[in-house]
Image (cartoon, rainbow, N blue to C red):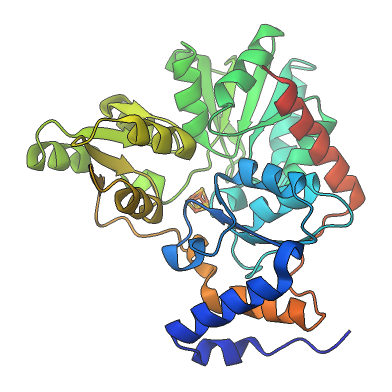
Length: 356
Ligand code: SF4
């Protein structure tokens, strides 16, 4: 295999050169290449995506395609999910392998095992693990192995209901807030939930809870506050506030609506011209929505909440570097799971799809 190209050379290119070279590389790679773009990517990168959307749908689109090379404009767990769902003939590439997810990094297999051991000692055979898709493949495989499932922010309610209908308790990780918001949506009281402190390895709240929440969080979504809502409502009387369920339950209760990125995009798309929206999610997505729906007022819930630093690691420079390496016969930054992890995680993902 030829030596890979020096990424530093790409940092000297100007904006026009980057665009031109990416388009040229895309054209040369043709149907062998599929570029995926998560809603939270900057528009500089997103404009090159063949498909745009949320992480799970993008991975499904990769699996449905015949493309040989899948370049994921997203973060590490998304590329892992794409690798799980795609065939052996397909190669998944992440332009920056350091693009992780702060929330996903708040739970690793060792820490989950400590919590699981505690719960199994106290409630043998009674707990089902449910992991949010924003997690490592290793944790998805843990759920596959232990009778659990994966969920997205759209399917978290179905996953919890599925577990409760079996008369089980649930360990939900890594996002405490999505777990609590979903539990409340299903009618659970605060007293039916307990929080596992991942640092101290202790449980707080009702020791006989039905829903055990791992205390992970998204640092972006937790920055939105009640004051932000008050401010936009004062400045824009009648404005609708819509937030992602990774926000705190307090915020979700104050908002007019909450839901996944797909839900947010759909609700705004279907709203009448002239409607006003303050959106509590990653700022790049808010900007894409504002540019798409120029007949509506769409603003970020707060101007001060910064973009996700991990998503920002994917830029045109490293995208082009990956593409030109492919043209030169080199695969760089491949995300490839072991067969064991991939099959365990696939089991949990298949279970997710089977839950109606
Ligand atoms: S916005 Fe939050 S949950 Fe999404 S990738 Fe960034 S840190 Fe992770």
